[in-house]
Image (tube, rainbow, N blue to C red):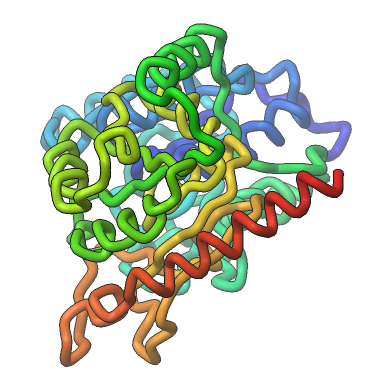
Length: 372
């Protein structure tokens, strides 16, 4: 920004998609703080409390506000936006993957003088040219983190100041104490802790991103043969029945496979930070593990690992690479599989293939730690 342009007084970042997307926007928040240190940065979220939990303790944000546009209805939503308009934002940033007309209308109604956002490759009628003042075209070769940073570097012409723009979670001593207490009560001795997240979100057919339960069970059996390995199953409260079913079906000794307690994002992050490896699909916890610098094995079906895979952390992507995948991009439509065998990209992916990836990654990590 030219030195003649005053430092913005107030900025709004709109992150109205899921908690994982909010976490992937934290490098952009960091750039805004580094570039405009005197600016008040506020974030608007929508989908439950998890996005707010992602931003708790984040020093780059002064206010996080949540509003459920989906349940509020049109009239209440418009009134909320008009109230926000009174805050007189200088800039707003609409981060990925908000590719619907409604998102841009919300941005426009809130009315920052400069409204920065995306033109997506998948045209869902969002009309960014009409509602935004600064538009960057999505680059499908880049990760969501790097695309979001382009709102800063390309749309506004600002230098990138953080040389390591990883997504960040900020934990305090209480979170680490919680993790240590739980592990001490459950794991007497283990050289290796491996986390599993077998669940996923459920909106827009995202439940179809889940690898089949019987494959998770078989993977647990394969990895749990080693007496020094403990498997810890993570997920939301709604996913607890799935996790408990895997424990029952695996048939492992009770001390070798555990169900992690339900907790806030940051309590869960503190537990994940103590894993040697984290196995998951394309979910919030994929990015929580990466933010905690935990190596990740990601089991990917309809989504694009270039966009939403583990960011800047040792990892393996396990996918069949069918000609039809990835089929799900940033669209207002849910996952719709057109393969003759529904969801073959995940249904045909066996536990043996994932086991190879896990053991390969663990060997690499252990070799690196021994040589350092």
